[in-house]
Length: 343
Image 1: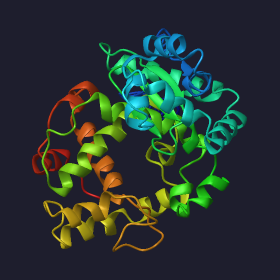
Image 2: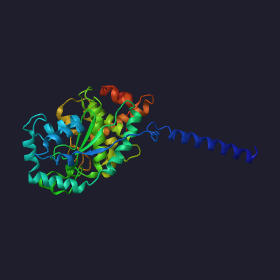
Image 3: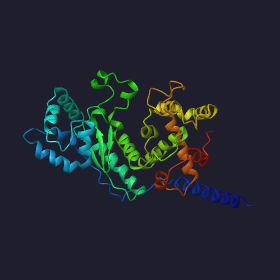
Image 4: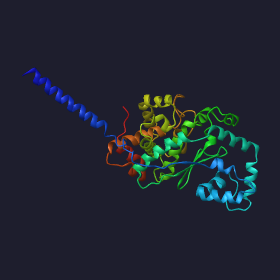
């Protein structure tokens, strides 16, 4: 056979192979075009407005804040700061006392110094909500609200409000955190970089009823894995360690030890345990996961749940993200359907 003809056929099949390979790469369901989507996400500064309340302007400004911040303002005053009922005439006295406290004033000033603006965080979240609206077209973009929580809440979401407690993102070496003797693993999460990811994860966990699922360990892992898969969608092309809140080293440890982690769950017959201590061991915060090397991150169970959900979605290409999030799951059946099996 003519060598030139053979070479031509080889080149033809090579080109076809490359085209097919590239097409396969583009089949990523989460790689979507959101250039035409407008999220209009913005963050209002309740932290600044609330500290402008005074006894002589209380009625006017208090009423205006209730209108502007709706149900979130009620939650903020009554539950987060615990100053009293928003419609109680005596509220202005407890607010005045709170706002005149030297330590509270100092905290507010520290927050203001660290967060003169939230432009960078708003831009990241605005882009994320474009993806969110694409996958959940009936959804509404929440009103972002920055607030001082008194070290109570990082994220507080209500029906249409997404609140961010700025005083819990002052940096892991902040003197307040050291004074309260918070452990290093906890302080490591109190950095500005975490704001968009914590906020969106909080919103996802609030938006969907993820409680109507099994009560065993694997079900709990998968429930959180669903939320992390939603993070895959809205933070497309962002690093995995940012989405889950691990360090790069911790995530690498999980990936390098995936088979051993899974073997531990299987050999110890933990997956279908409903024992509270078993569940807490693998999904609770801490310096590492109990029973695993100290190089491990805490909440390894959530990472495994994420891997299971990713495997499920890869094996069920017709299942939309909206269907995944809105369908109650039975852990055992979901695991079987995912065909998850570490190499």
